[in-house]
Amino acid sequence: MRTIAVVNQKGGCGKTITSINVSAFLARAQRRVLLVDMDPQGHATLGLLGKTVPPSKTMYEVLVQGSGGNRAVLLDIIHSVRKNLDVAPADILLSALPETLAGLVGRENILSGAIGCVAGDYDYLVVDCPPNVGLLTFNALKACSEAIVPMDPSFFSLHGIGKLLETFDVLARDTGHHIAPRVLVTLYSGRSPFVKAVVDEIRHHLDGRHFQTVIRYSVKLAEAASHGVPIADYCRRCAGFEDYQALVAEVLQQEAELLEARPATAPASTREASAGDDWLLPSAPAATPEGVLFAIEAVGATHVQLAGDFNDWASDGSDMEPIGGVWTKVVKLPPGRYRYRYVVDGQWQNDPLNAVVEPSPYGGHDSILVVDDAGSPAHAN
Image (cartoon, rainbow, N blue to C red):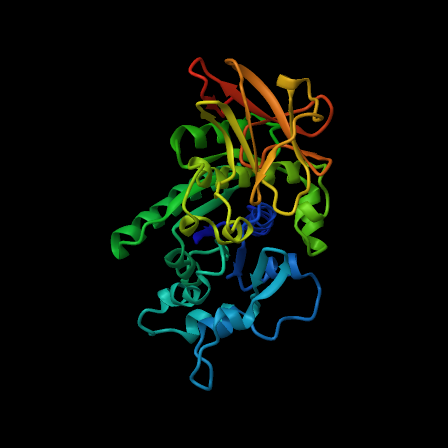
């Protein structure tokens, strides 16, 4: 189970929006996801469950010893949002946690212990952290091995990122627990030279520790959260949908490095979908002796096709073959730069595992593939 904290001590930088939409797009990619709300404001809870009846139990009961001497477990409080996506809710009671647990030995490790009972049930654990580096955030960091650090492109944010990375270093030095952080630029307008300069500064100084995807400012993201749904369930023709889809493609690229794996190492949802078949991980296009292998996970689909400028965008006659829930097709391609999309049950979409996309003249975005002289794909501009 991959464990990812969405963290920044600065408020208003898009942590909760990122937590919600990363979780939702991972679930759309057939990964089983648990979003843990560790912010006393409970905005991730509100942004997924909407204005329903408030949960009777929240993360407060999990983290604090109950009056009966038994701490609630995560399974007691989890709410199902939709297929593959659950949430562990929070409310204002969490704000009292530091005082309630004052003096308790090992209080920063409570969440780490709590997630043990669900480790086999999910492929991803995403933790939405509060806008400070206190006990709640340290619990999240001790429970996670990766961090997404949303950052709006401003001077104060640029200064604060250095302090936050120092916090990760202190955590590693004092506890031996290492976090792999990656900075995500959010609320990007691109209108001013200063904003562009901040992004260039991030890419220069944080080489290898930032996402290529930039989340553009989109009012639709806030509207979706106010309706209690992720952007994918609210508006698919907006910058917010395109950007978070591309972000999750980057997150999934680490899984896509291996095309073949034994079932024991596969994500749980994919193992179930492909039981009894040769198992494949969905992947961005990769080289094989026969040509370029295209693969996409589309569990439950009845018809998947591959279309691109290499076949004049003709989906007819470009059917992909299913292996469990993963659809594949091998295409001989000479060196060059190509655009392509998948057609899943008649719906055109770009490759969820290839972060490199460009606007299409026909609307939406095309995935980009570069084949070098050796016949190997390179996913780069």
